[in-house]
Amino acid sequence: MARLVMGPFNRVEGDLEVQLETAEGRIAAAWVNSPLYRGFEQILLGKKPEDALVYAPRVCGICSVSQSVAAAHALADAYGAETPPNGVHAVNLIHANENLVDHLTHFYLFFMPDFAREEYARRPWHEAVARRFRAVRGSAGAEFLQARAAFMHLLGLLAGKWPHSLAIQPGGCTRAVTPRERLHLGNIVGGFRRFLEHRVFDAPLEEIAGLDGAAALQRWQAAHDPDRSDFARFLALADDVDLVMLGRASDRFMSYGSYRGHDGATLFARGVWQAGQRHALDIAGITEDVSHSWMAGGTEAPAHGLTRPDPQREGAYSWCKAPRLHGEVVEVGALARQVVDGQPLIRELVAESGGNVRNRVIARLLETARVALAMSDWVDALHPGEPFHLSTKPQMEGTGIGLTEAARGSLGHWLQIEDGRIRNYQIISPTTWNFSPRDAHGTPGALEQALQGTPVESGSRQPAAVQHIVRSFDPCMVCTVH
Image (cartoon, rainbow, N blue to C red; front, top):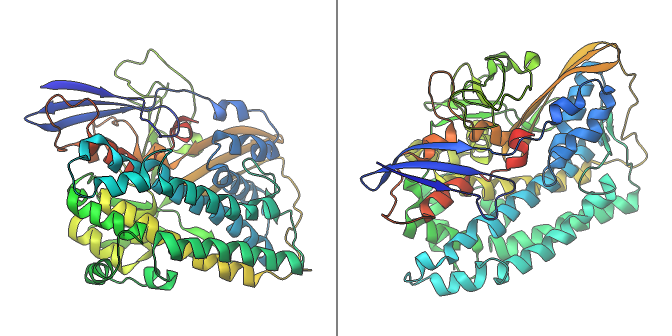
């Protein structure tokens, strides 16, 4: 047996350390450590409930809208607040803007640059890939950042600023739009669509969203030039490097459902996918285990959980808690959302090869196409002159749960109010699910499972396969411990 410690991971938001035990050229076991404690849940104690709308988004600077949405949903649940249709559509547009930016930031700036590493220098595609995707110097990054800046004008118009906007409230969105501004929103979404269709896919978004199986994906790949389509380039790289064989975890997937409709439905369904079947999601089955975390306490439901640091805890190796659903490890993220929702290509890929590096990235890009199409519908559904927000009366006592889907997966806020103050506030972020440590039964978290069995060359200190697996989850480490 040999030990290898990797970290911090370059280009990953926040701190991350992975300890690997290798034997006979493969990873035998992995321990994932989130080494930075922050304490937002403690900061919120004793504050006015509405202060969560100020503090919670500052858990993270790249997915703050998701934190805002979850906090607003928790307050709305506690207050019994209602949201008018305009408010629902506006919040969806703000949230989708950030999520799609996160998806493509991950793809262009975090994930694809790993293929420009010298480790792949002898591959016939390396020179072209390095020109396109090399960190900082590649052409793809500059193109994407320009498109990203134009797309994020939507956040300026609807949210006032990014990150940490206060536009999202329990009763909807505080920023109403005029007819002229609605046209401007349509132009912003249309401009981003052109970037997606011209450079990311080299195909209409409807064509990508309509891919209905592995055979359809293979036909699509054969018909598209990797030099014109970054999606086609990724598929070719995935085949050559055999990404389908990397990063398989428990194959148990969860989604809270995302992008609410004014009729109560969601664009993507809520549920759990396991063994080829979708099951209803029982929120009451969620617990947090701290047996291997530097935290005091035991296994609790988040509504009753505490955040009490215990840096001397025996057997602990991470500040991250271990959330479980009915005691089981689940994976969250774009792959989970799409398989739970029933997207036929993703369901077939998961049936064939489970959750793996290739399938996670395919799901992320396919979801980008689906959400971009929905954004056009939400803009068209706005009715200037009608309410975007309904005022609600704060309550002195109550509880609320705010569930949403960030780019990286399921995000939940649990709120308890007593005497008009926050009595307890607990957050379970997506990377907390995916990068959890072992639980009291010794069961590794999703990433720890995904790393087991990965081939590692003797003497390698930064194995590319490990980098690919870690990045395939698109981790946000500051959200993990919050």
